[in-house]
Length: 406
Image (tube, rainbow, N blue to C red; front, side):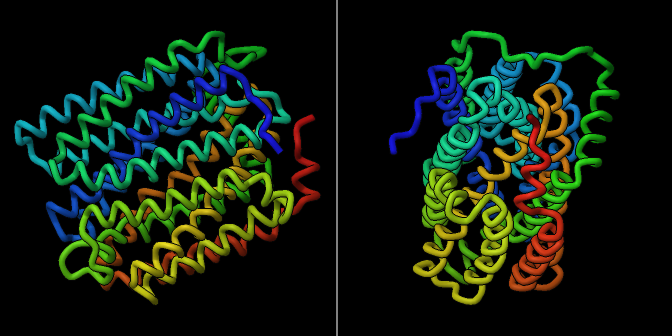
């Protein structure tokens, strides 16, 4: 069946998001490679991931309050300009030889702050662009484009650009944010949520948190997301040391490592595009719980069989599970949260879901430095499976239907 058209407004948002995610992907894939070229310390390498994800813990609630108060398109455009300025300035600093490792930490942290505000506004903008019945289809396409740009294109490109130095990663990413802003700025119309009254920022934040805390279903999947992200980040914050560089188990070069990440990108795109099909075959609950369970077990493969010919297809399957599960979770949230609360509750959800990422990076680095990398991998699998088992007690088709907003 041919996908239903979602309109020019969605096409503009899709295009701008893809370009912006290509820039994000260059930075996220390139930063660990740059760090691994400066130090072989698992802790120092993992600090790059921690710095990039720490803003979710610090800024998520305020990002949600802003998204429910201001025009969401204007927020996204403004932050694209800000990230462009930051990264182009960082490229100049890199050429000047400013302390490489500290500069890397600062850049990924500040870019992460902008990403938090932009991502919350972007996700909360989708229900204002497409009809309710089109949410899963829109999220599927948007996630597919995000994953394709973030990893499929960005990962190998980052591997190549890393060989030319940090200024190339920063400069190209900064230019892409300029293009993203220029595309989205042409989108017409207002994208501010309708609200009966405007309260203080503090009251807004409390209202969003209270809704999530009282909503057992949303609270359960938020905890599941947080647990999975903690485990996933602990694993991948040090995986670059297992996969590439001198003495690594898999023995890849930096460009080859970038190509390995393409396997994750391919799977993520396929997973996002197949989300509607998998929901129909497995059911929403089956995908939300079964996907994370499969991901957890597949994380064992690179440790048990450190051969790129086995790891690459494993990553494809793992990412299919991840991409399709993410689409199911996002679409479900958009159906369960009132439109005027979407930004705040989304940000509260992602505070739990993404707030564990810096902790996961630090845990992965600390365990890897104190013991060895296989201990990190096994610990991550145990944590992830524990999260799935806890969520299974609270997630069911009946509970999802009962919680939907009319």
